[in-house]
Amino acid sequence: MRLSIFLEPQQGATYEDQLAVARATEDLGFDGLSRSDHYLHMGDHVSGLPGPTDAWITLAGLARDTSRIRLGTLMTAATFRHPGPLAIAVAQVDRMSGGRVEFGFGAGWFEQEHAAYGIPFPASARERFDRYEEQLDIITGLWSTPVGETFRYEGRHYRLAEGPALPKPQQGPRPPVVIGGTGPKRTPRLAARFADEYNVPFCSVEETAAAFGRTAEAVRSAGRAAPMVYSAAQVLCVGRDEAEVARRAERIGREVSDLRRDGLAGTPDEVVDKIGRFAEAGAERMYLQVLDMADLDHLELVASAVAPRLDRTGSGGGGAGGLRGGTR
Image (cartoon, rainbow, N blue to C red):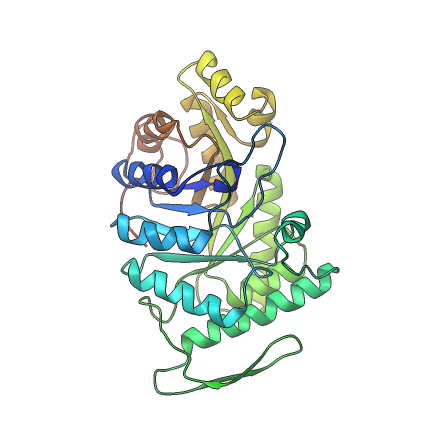
């Protein structure tokens, strides 16, 4: 079981705020740091000030300001960028980081932020997924084309003339690709074809297990030999006692009862137990969504009171540590 920190900077964060969390993430021994790719805040309990930060510009900075942790997105929106320039940007950040990038990639869904910043938003989910699939084909194709050879693509939505397919990422043949979501058919098929990791965001243990099962079946049906990493993302709200849990819940505008039901919330004992249930469902990695970036003590509590109690398989147990540290 690996633990990564997951940020939502569109809710209101500067680069310096994110860097402080990244450095704490590294110092405390977590596996990685991922961030959302959004340009508009969500909900009425935050203002979003001082405004959004671009995911890949931020990760480029963090690539130079950290040295160990994995860095990625959950999820970059296919609607935001053309696939050729996106492949270049991700490859460059991978090289800047010394090969620590993980490319979380999704179809895009938040129509309001597209309207707010003049980004075209395909009206139908079918077209968004069609474009998304072509982008996956193009980006992974550009990265895997051998140096000295050219890449050409003729799709319905994107066409690339023969080009050098450069630059290459530092990781070979490419950075790990993370695909997420709970769609019953197309998402598992795309994950089986393109992904190194399949992620289920903000679902119950039972829903997560069912989604893992659908993707595992798609992997088998595709005759795929490469292993698939299975992961889950959950909002985090841990406290040493009930008062601390309630204080953290209030700061992010959530009810403790809802967080206990829908996230990783409560005392360290409760969180260890629930992570163990996700591990039993097949999760090998948990993304801990931290909504209050100023509360670095929250991360320290997880590192000291939760992580050492997770064994190598991620089940809650009495003692075996060994979760923290290491890269993929």
